[in-house]
Structures are given as C-alpha cells and as structure tokens.
Image 1: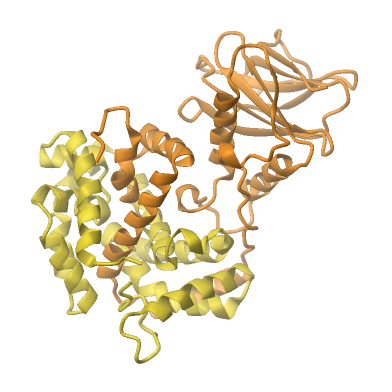
Image 2: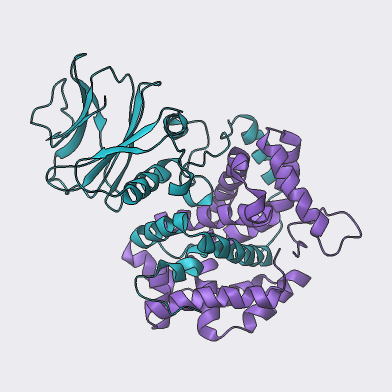
Length: 256
Length: 199
C-alpha cells in the first residue's frame, strides 16, 4: 500500500464514503475522484460496506412511508439521464480550448471547467439537490448539459486581470455560453462580479457570479449571444447592475 | 450480498439474495423510465434500510419521516442516474439516504453548543447494539464491527451512525485527524473483508 502523504487525497476515500468530510476536503476529494479511476473503484466497494451498515440498522418504517412516497412521485418530474462530459477525459472532442492569453495548459483548463461544471451538473449522491419538484436547478443543469453536448461547443480560457481564470464553454449554434471562474480575488462587502455580453448588438447584463465555492464559481449561463459579442467581467455594486457596466472590465473575451 | 432486511419481500428459496439484488437493480432501471409500480416495489424493498439509517442519524421522529420521504423521492427523481456497473442498487440508495440524513443533522447542528451536546451522546456503536433484533445480517455486521480495532470501529460508527465529521471524530477520540482518516478507510476495508463478498 502506498504511504499516504498529506497531499494525497486518495486516503480520504473512507471518510468520504462515510460522509465524514465537508467543505474544502470534500471538494478536493471529489476533484481527485473525477480523475482517479482507482479511487472511484475503491469508493464503490466502500459504499457496498456502508450499505451493510445501513442494513444493519434497518427497521420497520412507518406504515404510510411507501404510500406517501408513491403519491409524491406521481407529482414529481424525474431527472433526465446523466450527461457525462463532466470528467476531463469525457469532454466531447469538440470542446477544446481555442486560446489562452496566459499559459493555462489544456489539461488544467479542462480540469477546471470540468470541476466547475461538475459542481452544477453533477449526478449521483454527491450532489443531490434538496428539491422535490422540478426547479430552477434542474432547468439550469439541463441548459448546461445542452451547451456541453452541443456539437460545436468550444472552450475558451483566459486570465482575469487582478487574478484568477475564467472559462467559457460556448455553443454558437445555441447562441449560449456557460461561464465559470477559478481563483478570483474575494470582493469587499457590497461588491460583486458582474457578467456582460457586449458587442454590436449592444451591452447586455448576463448575470452576477455566485459566491465561490473553494475558489470556483458555479456556472452562469448566458443566452442570446450575438455575432461579434465579447463576454466581459466587471466588478460592481451588489443589486445595481444597470444596463451598462459601471467600470472597465477585468476580463474581455472575444467569442468570435 | 446479504439482503435480509432490504430484501424483505424476497422470493422464497433464495437465501443468498443474489437474484433479489438483481431485481432491485432492474426495478430501479424501470423507475428511471417512469414506472410507478416499480417505484412502489423499490420503496417497499429499501424502506427498512432507508428508515433505519435515517433514524440512526437523525433521531427526531418527525424529521426522520421527512428525510425518508426526501430520500425515496430522490430515488424516483434520480433513478436515471443509477449506474448498475458502478455498484449495487442498495448501496446507491443507502448512500443517498445517509447523505441526506447527515445533511439534515449538520444543518441542525451548526452551533458549537449543539455540537457539544452531540458529542456528549453515547457512542454510536452502542446504539447499533441497542437497535439489534436478531437478524442474521445485522449480527454479522455487528460481529465484524467487533473485529475492528477500537479506533477503526469508533471512527466508522461515529461517522456513519453519529454523522460526526472526521475532525469531530478526531477531537472526540483525541487522535490525530490523519489517523482517523486512515482508520476510516482501513476500517471499512476490514469490514468488507470480514463481511465477505459485498457484491
């Protein structure tokens, strides 16, 4: 057996199977898991063991448990099958980095995008949403899947001035893009990162980046991308994005 | 794998549960296609294990019921995400159940005071013992738990039944986190070996 090192997330498989790691440790292990076949295999085996622990605690449930679940199911839409472009290796070949203004290697960029996108579109127990009914998350997840699976999807990465990187996966056919970041500096209270589409068709606000999770922001989807648009990132006041950016962009990425 | 609890409605004459387990997988695939009758059958089959693990972790009866409902509904909703090649259907369901239960407890137990109170609880292994009736599989799990070292056993049971994080287990047992991390993993591996083929 390999000697565990402090930086070796592999040994967290047990703690992960027991749901005993949270936050940064959990995210780190999940990123590792996405790249490590051996870990996925081991986790599968460990989950068979935890299933036995669950069975060992089995008891008669309330009489109406099944009845209520069936009634609830009848009112609840099901998720479509998982899309699998979530691991770098599984990204469709069409998704490729076109350019990176700073040396961001393909592997890192793909890993980054995959990790960010996985955060939003992940399937399985690791990312269960609390929703009972068809909701915004599900719609969003579907929209992200559409872009990732689009035959003409391309990936762009760029350094953001001030620190961090931005990754865009864009489908010209669908005129839609998915935007994620990693390592942007934290902003003072009352400020947020705002996303814009800018070009001949005019400036349009495209949303606000959510608070980062372990440095990464979950994907923002921008639709109705027009010819000649660039995607721009600015820092602005929370709650007042307006129709035009109030400051010069810290990122401008041409989508041509 | 042993299916004595989750496979309560198993066909007669199949003590090893193999066919039953395949059935649960087939049923979940049918659920993925929207088959409500199959969903009902799945609920009946996994209900006791789901209820058991959620109850062990959550305790409060009202919340236990709520979380069980969430879990079963998630099984319905996410059935298409079950990948038969990657593990048993029961493991898929109990993973969802445990995750949900732990989420519920952790969102309840944010404050340090509540964590302290949780730490004062009797250790989870005793609760397993307390919940034991006389089912064969349960006995076997209990026996295998007994074959672990005490740090392995407590790391595994405090985390699984007690919803303690690695850090909390380390604090509770006064053992370095790195040790607990390793014990959780090798404890589960030893359990697996003791329980025999888990698939």
